Amino acid sequence: MMALTGVAALGGLTAIAGTKKAPWWTDRGAHGSDPAWIEPPVDTIATPAPPSPTATATGTLPSRQEIISRYGTRTPHYWGLHPDSSWSTFPTDTSLTRNSACLTFDACSDSSGYDERLINTLREHHIPATLFVNQRWATTHRQEFESLVADPLFEIGNHGTNHRPLSVSGRSAYGIAGTKDVAEVYDEIAGMHTWMATNYDLRPRFFRPGTAHADNVATQVSRAMGEWIVMFSVNGDSGATASANQVYQQFLLLRPGGILLAHFNRPGSGTAAGVERALPALTARGLRFRRLDHVLPAATSPEQPPRW
Ligand SMILES: [Zn+2]
Image 1 (spheres, helix red, strand yellow):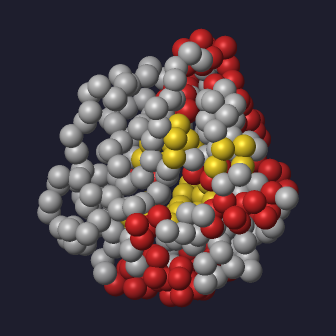
Image 2: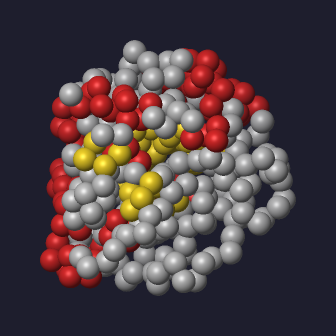
Image 3: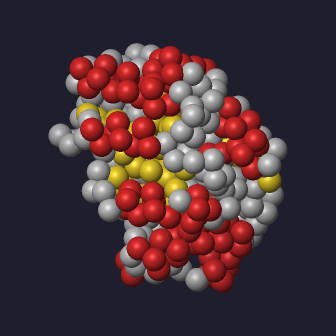
């Protein structure tokens, strides 16, 4: 069942924040001045030229055929959590982004529920966040979804149509089959995008694939469709399987420029209690919270994500 595989899949990410660290992780304090990680050296061979997206300029998506023609013959060289052309951290070199971090919460494809306690905690503390919502969750939690859409505290991101890992070659993650080609990548992004645009006049700027896995061609496709792929630097709740204390400890790993991933579709988990404890501690450190649309450029921008 999707509910069980979802837990196993994201539970598999548990060790990420502890073992896979960004270059700035250990040597950069909350007020560090070393800018090296903000603009790391770019491998000009591996980094493709920015695409020329048409989606955000017109408010409509490029056609499926246009995307297939442009990307259908490309071969990916990377599969995993931090592909090229995706964001796992963001630069903190402006007054708005300095000492800032982003909290992102996903609602995955199963219908396990809505963590009202968590959302209420964010509202009570006036903590902005980006919520990545899967289309199946949105259609089975319509009332809750509409209340989130109406709340200016929250930005709604695209968490896919069928919650599939984003592959152009049929790769899988944690036993969940990914999309099998560029056409299916298009459908995974476009389905939820079109549903949000049609029903709520929303055009999401950010996409997070199911299981947070993508290849480096799929990230280019997503960008060309007007949506940056956003991953994470801190795994906040291990797919909502972590205890409240583990969630608290993970949240304390958040640094300026960091993007934290947790979940709001599992009300029985330790996530809400851990967040309640962590928010005052992080705020006391001087950390400020922003939505992704406050700190990341538009997909049409020539700016490139830092290399993980
Ligand atoms: Zn998910």
